[in-house]
Length: 139
Image (cartoon, rainbow, N blue to C red; front, side, top):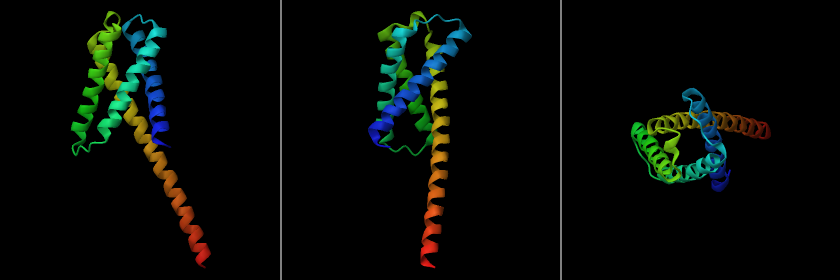
């Protein structure tokens, strides 16, 4: 998948996940949210988040815990800033926004790990098939 297609796919996935998690949190904590403007606000926030994480991914961090902390901190800062811009704090407290950011990040990491595992298994099958075909042709 090309870089742009992957980025668009990531933005759509994270936006969908964020909206589902937002809906669940609003039910659990009794928060009333106007969803129509919020959908576009979350979409814009997720574009900024994904592009920032892509940029951060260009820099190699050797400590995985530090990498996760930087990612989560970046996401929290973006959401806090967007909360100020779009006045989300009338409906959602800051701590709940940060909690949602952490849940979304964990969800995305689990999804990414599962996708990488599935892709690795598919590549291994293709390599085994190629090796078998080369062995058959050599005989």
